[in-house]
Length: 389
Ligand SMILES: Cc1ncc(COP(=O)(O)O)c(C=O)c1O
Picture 1 (cartoon, rainbow, N blue to C red):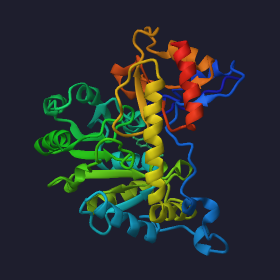
Picture 2: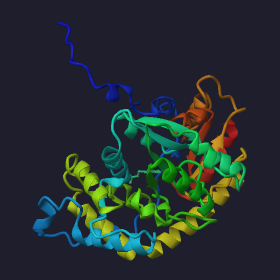
Picture 3: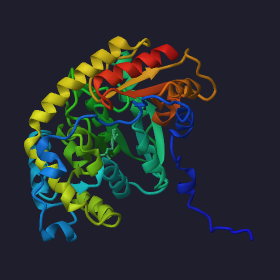
């Protein structure tokens, strides 16, 4: 008997499942120590206070009850204070929503701000999942080549690049600083160009600042701290990157109270609330993790510098984030982009992220995370990459 299913949604059909499937096949033939440099994570344990075993969890009914929709009140209060003082964003009480990581924060924000058929401008290369988040709501992504232009030509006014991508359907710009995958940190001049576009065209700004604590050469500036911008910006943060707690899935959105109420509806109707036990570990990291941030930043900077010195391919020095973005054109890329090269690297037991999910223009590029493994394994991985290249 032939079983036929009712059809899936167009959005589900169009989303990619895994960008790593082909590489995992090649990896299957490798018997030694696999070095995973494709995923953006850290080898560091979270700050001691933020580890699950350190939480006073026993016999507490709150851990097993539904929690408040905005997030656990002490965490919401601490985040409100952090966003006001650290990010200098004049957020009101009620202007924070705790989410299941920044991924959920961005999904809820897109759901709150955009309708099917609306356009969102992605400054590329961009964090891959934002495209799928938009696509899953039938929002159209418009790519604007951006950070590589600014890295190549510091001082370039990016206003015309972005302004010409605005149409009657544009509703929002997604900005990521420090940027994943190339580590560009936007200074006030570059942010001012985005502000001009947003103000003139009446757009929302979705500001992804999950790497805010990992800048090496420049200070981080939140776009919502610039005059007038708090009213049109949603700022997203994450405990995944800041405190090495990616597995806890705790993030947040900060913004104007009525907009956060809309974001809250999206969160409430998708997960109801973030697990209480995990919010506690996040709060402990926020309260007691400043030493961790300083130590991690020092280690990450050293890993970045040693990785760049060891790599046989030239790479622009990322001012922030935890990635190197490598141009592999000339190293055996073909119509499939750099996948054939990445397959050979995978056959040597090292995984890198292929470039095409970061934007249509980046098929010949690959991303390497320099914090995914400790430095000795990172350098071993780079040695293997060099031999393949
Ligand atoms: C730029 C950017 N935004 C958002 C996320 C999602 O982070 P989270 O683990 O908090 O969902 C990531 C994770 O890699 C990221 O790099």
